[in-house]
Amino acid sequence: MQTLDDVMVLKADSHGAAPGLFKEQCIDLEQTPFLNWSWRITNHLEGLNEQSKAGDDYAVRIYVVVKGGLAFWQTKAINYVWANNTAKGRVWPNAFAGDHAMMMARGCK
Image (cartoon, rainbow, N blue to C red; front, side, top):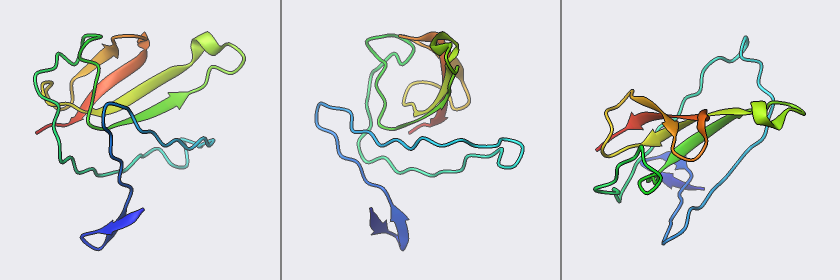
């Protein structure tokens, strides 16, 4: 954690790898149905077809998972991604997981 423009932020650097941070918790969506965040990207990934396996790479993503309990095959996820080549708000199935993990473009350059 560090301060940027007087705001506490999480900074991640990647060089040929994918850093990650996760937090597992149970959330009552009746009580807290919102997820709020902001992000700042310094390096954009250019020229990717983000709906393909070869282009499934993002400067940043937020991965929200709903567990399927003992039926792990019923686990669902949505990935909010910083997409350079896909219009903001567009939704598509993950190239590797199909419709079990949907992608949504939230940021763009």
